[in-house]
Image 1 (cartoon, rainbow, N blue to C red):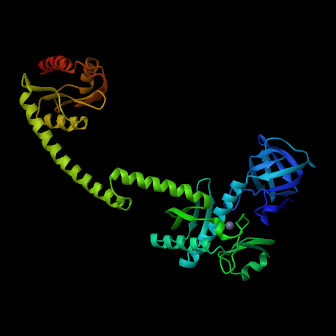
Image 2: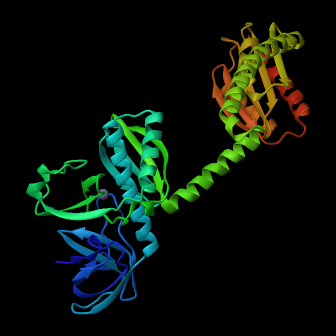
Image 3: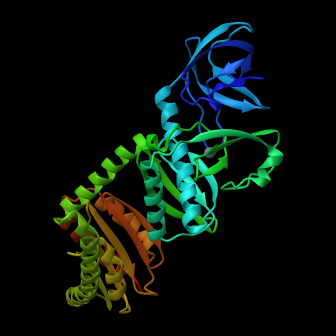
Length: 402
Ligand SMILES: [Zn+2]
């Protein structure tokens, strides 16, 4: 069994240890030591990294109560090895984990909200609370947690037997624990069972910043950063706010209001735009109807129109409400042109078939069937001539209809 040195001294960065066992582990080797400074992944906290005998530790896992250090080179049982942890990574984990205890304590003290989950990722941590809370309540939890940091309270350890747990005042009663249990506590403050690595006094946690919340299983998931992670987070959010203020030409405090008023303005413009577009389509429909070529009792409208491509279909549909109408309408798009071929019900032509003649003339791709076909072309040069040519062709097709 490995003596887990990190449990009693989270500030211990190096240790000399003896290899107890070493076995193949996938493409690497799992080394067991008689004593270890390496925290294995567990309890929401990621493992330590560092070196064993100069070899990088890729992972540290717990398996059947054994601590396995994953390295790329094998060791022999009996080898004496120097172990070093990546201290920056460990101290960061200590700041985050102690910060989580303080936040959970504040949530329970202020609003009776129990912590039901904790996860630490490389960028931020999440804490799950069983209760939904308001924005004001979250801010109060953040303020209390930071006040506890400023109070610079000691973070202490003690060990009790599992059967004593029920008689203790703990933030959360842990279930299913056996043997000796480790308790992390602050005098007159938080107390809970935990095997993570912690700072010695709360001042070392530094700033605790809540990044956001989201509903989670009837409660709340809160994301946060502590200590050295809080500074880049604040710098990033300040940058975003400054950029937004610059974009809106307003003070940073006025950004939400500026967004609101721009949204209102946009909604008004969209409404007006819709009304004007309807009027424009109606006017163009009228104009095109007047210019229609009459072909043996049928009418043909082939034109490039000055409208966005999205308006081609409603325009063609409006024109084809008049029986015996065939339309070929084109509009310039961001790249190239788009066309719509449309005819009145019962005209006796298939637009899918006509599209096969239209496509080569416009160097377009497109298709359809029945009364509607559409397509697009990248090339726009000589468009007027092509339309004229196509109009001649469509006229002929109309002439032979009965
Ligand atoms: Zn913990």
